[in-house]
Image (cartoon, rainbow, N blue to C red; front, top):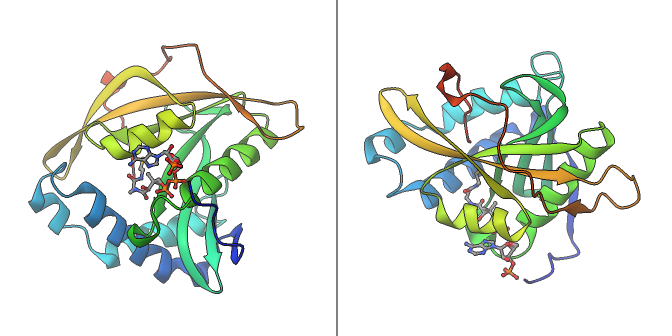
Length: 206
Ligand SMILES: CC(C)(COP(=O)(O)OP(=O)(O)OC[C@H]1O[C@@H](n2cnc3c(N)ncnc32)[C@H](O)[C@@H]1OP(=O)(O)O)[C@@H](O)C(=O)NCCC(=O)NCCS
């Protein structure tokens, strides 16, 4: 892995970052999800809809428990990660990565790893003992990325109905080191999870 350029810094996102984040999220969806979600579904994703989603996520009033961090290179946002407590079922001591995206032209330069490690470090400081995430079942690149970072497939699958399109998702988990020394993440050996994917809830891998 190439070490990210020293000009990249990680920082919390602000509302001023929303247009750039939305644009990178849109580009990332187009590059990563074509062929693994129906074209018609992908065509329905717009930058405007991403702006609405990210305005909500970075607003402390709307999303008080959500944190969003960005990888910023001299004012250009190259990657974004949002995270917070597990949503379903709600659990303050279990973290969840809600979204992780890197600009397609910056893939495989270490930015995803940088953002994910920082998100997990911040979740550990919230006393989260483990973290989960949902990833599209057929998103082989992202699954390989998470597996390379020590995440384990829990065996859970959920077919989400997104505007009439059935999108299968899978859940991954990792145990966090709460020692506070390093935020180092240790490999999860415990499969299984207390979420019932049949409850009709929306895990929303983004
Ligand atoms: C998945 C994603 C966040 C990874 O970010 P990235 O910056 O490209 O990944 P990194 O450079 O930090 O990769 C770190 C390590 O993870 C592994 N990895 C990353 N991508 C991989 C891939 N496609 N296949 C296999 N291993 C991979 C490798 O071990 C890599 O180290 P290496 O490059 O030295 O081999 C990025 O590709 C992305 O934004 N994809 C589209 C959106 C997406 O799918 N997000 C996940 C939603 S749940």
